[in-house]
Image (cartoon, rainbow, N blue to C red):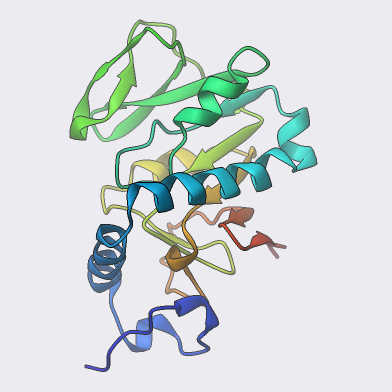
Length: 201
């Protein structure tokens, strides 16, 4: 197998000619392990600055976001900075689906997959969200995404018309990845160097 390029977004080769989804996951995981703490923080700051400049973000009141794991692009500072001006929500695993609950700084506990999840019983419907910030292992320039393989977000996103935004490190953005019929693409992909608005047909 050929060596996979370190800067995949600059390549024109189709990924599915080189790697399947599991290979992409391993490749991205290896790249993440090379990041130092300062690099992680700087990347998160640049991505969040791009997000905060979007008119859609400024006007959105109800935003579903994920509470980032150590290997993910950080969302904690975003929640801290904006939680008094916007209504944030976090997902909580419920079987094979995700429940949506309000974000409260002191109302989190370790849940499924070692992710901090909201507590309580105040469930909200996906239809109430103006914007959804979606995690993924990889994105392409058409908004297709590769998740961690559990399908939680594909099931959740299938029932919403909210603006869907993917945030990622530069090395998580690829020119093209294969998509299955049930995969739900995002509308905007933001990395440290790119803000890509997808015009879906």
